[in-house]
Every structure is written in C-alpha cells, then in structure tokens.
Length: 220
Length: 348
Image (tube, chains in turn brown, red):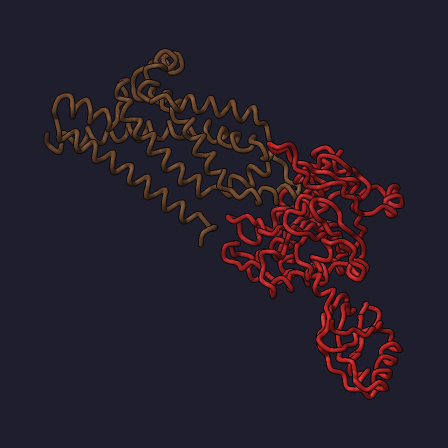
C-alpha cells in the first residue's frame, strides 16, 4: 500500500482513537474521581467515616473492575443500545469504555489520595475546616501530582481498551490494525497502526511524567 | 474572627478556667478487651498558663491533647472550653471552637504543595477573609515568626525549625486564645528547640495566648511552663505549679522524668562532706563566693546537681567538710544564715 493510500487511513484512525480516548477518559473521571474521594473519606478514621458505605462501594467497584473489557462490551450490548441509540460504532463504544474505566479510575484516585499525609488532614481539621474545605482545599490539591501521574496511567489503559472496541464496530487504530491489517493480511497497515498506538502511549506517559514532576513541590 | 460571646455571659465565664478536664477516659478496643489510654484525668488550665503535660511515650499525653479539640473522641468524661462542653457541641460549634484553639504538631503538617504564604493564609481563607486583607495579615504573621523572606518558598525548602515557625504563624492566623502544642519541638535539634520555645513564650506573654504543650522532655517544662501535669500509664501521676512539683516530686514517674535516680538520691561522698540543698528560695546571687568571703573558709566542691528553673536554683551540692572544727562551724553558720539547708554526710 502506498503512503498516499495509507496516510489518510492512519490519520482517520488516529483521530477516532483520540476521540474515543478523550471522551471516555473525561466521562470516566467525572464518575471515578468523586467515587475515589468517597472511598477515602468514608473510611474508618477519616473525615466522614461510614465503614458500611465504604465497604459496599469497594465491593461494587471490585466487581465492575474484575470483568474484562471485551466481555463487558458484549454484556453491555443491550444497555449500550438503550443509552446510545446503537450498540455499534465509534461513539457508542464510549459507553462500555466508561463503564469499564471508571471503577479503575476510582481506585487510582483512591490510592493517590491515600498518599496524602493524614497529619495534614488533622491539621486542617484542627483549624476548623468543613469537610468540603478539607476535600477541595487540602486533600485534592495535595494529591495533584499523584493524581496527574495516575491519570496518565488511566488514559493509556483506556487507549489500550479502544483497540478492543473494534469488536463492536468501533473505529480507531486498533480496528485498523486488526481488521485491515491482520484479517486481510496487510501487514504494513497493521505495523504502522500499532506503531502509532505505541507513539500515543509514549506521548501520554512522557507528558504525564513531566507534568507530575513540574507540579510536585514536595520532593525538591 | 469568630463572634465573641455576648457581654452578659462574660462575668460568669471570667471565673471559669479556660480549659477544664473532668474524669476524662479514653479506651481503645483491642482483641484482648480494651486498652486504657487515659484513666480519670482531671485538670484545669487557666487563662495565660503555659501548661506542660509530660510523660514517657505511651503515657497517653498525645491522646489527651488530641481530645481537647476532639481530634480524638474521649470514651467518657467532660471537657469544658470556657465553660462550654466540647463533647456536646454540634459540628459548626466545634469548628468555631477549634478556630479559637489552634494546634501545632511534631511533624509540622504543612500543606506541601502550597507556598509558605498560602499555608499561613489557609485559616483566613476558610474563614472567608477577603484576599487583600488576608495577604496583609499573612505578611504580618510571617514577620512575627521571622520568615517574611520565605513567603514564596515551599515547605520542602525549609529547615525543621522554619517549618515549625510557619506552622506557628498559621496557627496564630485565626487569632486563637489557646495554642495546643503536640510534641512541637520533639523533631527539632536542641538549638532550634530553644528558639521555638522562646517564640512560644513570647506569644504567651505578648498576645496573652494560653499554651498547652505536651512533651517528653523535662527541659521544655523547666524552660517555659508555669504548670505541669505528669502522666504515667494513662493516669495523672501529679500536677501543680512547676515550682511545687519540681521541689516536692512525689510520684515515681515524676522522679524518673526529673532525672532523680535512686542512686543520686543516696549520693554518698567518698570523704566527709557537707550537703547544701538549694530549694529555689535563695541562690539568686553567687552563693559560693559569698560564703567563701564571709566565712573565710575555702570551699572545695565535690559534686553538684543543680537545675535553674524560672531563675531559681534547685538541687544539691556536696562540698568537702573542713577538717578544722572551727572552720567547719563558720562554714555551716554562714550557709545557714544565707538561708540554705545543710547537713553533714559521711562515706559508708
């Protein structure tokens, strides 16, 4: 295949991959971030202790997290159709991506927030902070470098999931590599699409690491 | 600033201690039953006190100070802050009370991702002070602790002593009436400890802020406290003014902490000696040179164990007993006239 044929194919697939990854990540964080906060603050000894809630939420998240994405895709077919209008295509695949990714993100956020020294939270309490002030002015800001680092990992994971979305008719670099490349034996397509996926992961990782270092004032 | 109590209740409150702890008890459940961290603790802190709570690690002192602002919840008992039971307070009341009793910690607990200035501004920010006014107050506080040059630095760029100064500035931001210090100098070297203690004393004197501090170091108590409570195994071993407790240490825990070892109490000389006891009442002047001058007897000091405490001397000194009986009598008489207690001791 010539470059003039391959180029537009790769470009279109890259745009689709980025589109799926960005939207799925944003919506997953919208759900996963608050859940991660809740997991931490409702724990015993934290600012809003509610062990039953914390345990139940933990079990639900673990349950969702243990279902492999490819199976989730199939299981969610009817739900996806109901929510997105159709169960196939690049946009509708965002729904199962979110369902698979938000529990993962909740755990990532949880582990970032756990790194915040409890003494800092107690100091904030001793100054008469409300729960909201502790969460938004202490807990989250103190965890920013770690949250960014976690986000880079989460986004690359979602990017990897998008490759599987081809099973549900989603587009992107994964679909290109598997359908055009592997199935009809156009190996140049397969390799170039795979290389682009690797490049995207690298870009996100490097960017994430730089940002984390730049924002962290704790280790200087 | 929190709205103060209405004038009508002031006279009633003036007679009450600032902090009153009654029969405080704290137990932690453990597999074998329960662990008693604090057992029937009662003590009162008056306005203007620098109240030291001392004990070995595990004595329960940290739990005690953390109960005062309810970072820990007591299992039983009552704590009154200006006559208000802090254990019966609603969340908003508790938050308002906490702003009047700031706290500093052994590990400083500064916001690591915020600058020094923003750390100090935090209490003002959560109280809703306008930004411009808050920034002015921040600089004023940083000047007070001698760190105005470090406003834009991050805590990780500061030394331990500087971090604690930032923590003190932050604690003072809410204009508190009380300052709780949880092992505030334990992570610092001796020199830095001195400067932080001096700062705490200055804050107490100049701003009238009541200080409650916990420590495991007797030197801290001796240097700045006027009252002391000794905790031992979750129980109050003794309490009172520092003078009193130091002079008449009754409890075993107190003797351990004051460094009065059993062998020192039985400190016997290797030759006949005169034991001179300093009880804080005399000893303002250079006693020994005065004794030498007035008695005309040379004094040979064998050993001395004397502590300076609030500019008074406590402890004892052993001096060689003069062979000459007349010299012995003149020395003893001179010492007694000055107001010191003396006794002759002999080796066994």
